[in-house]
Length: 72
Image (cartoon, rainbow, N blue to C red; front, top):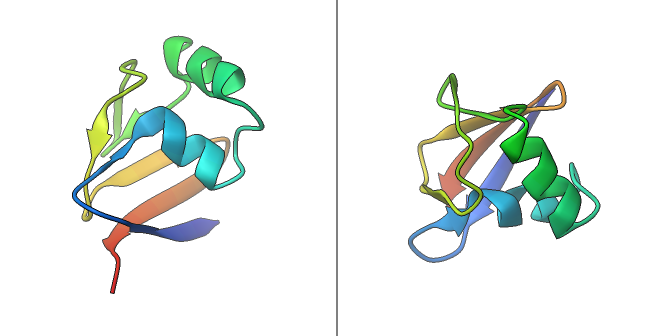
């Protein structure tokens, strides 16, 4: 399944994105999932909890695809 997420401002941090989309119920569980290598950014595993994600990027986690778009 695919989720489109509108980024407010220039970027959103990876851990904040997982919480904002409801795919992670807390910051701690988001950090654990990222540290365990369960999150891919643009098809590559990314273990940076505070990676700055911008519109046009795609995140894969828990069977979901999150497409980042610019806020209209």
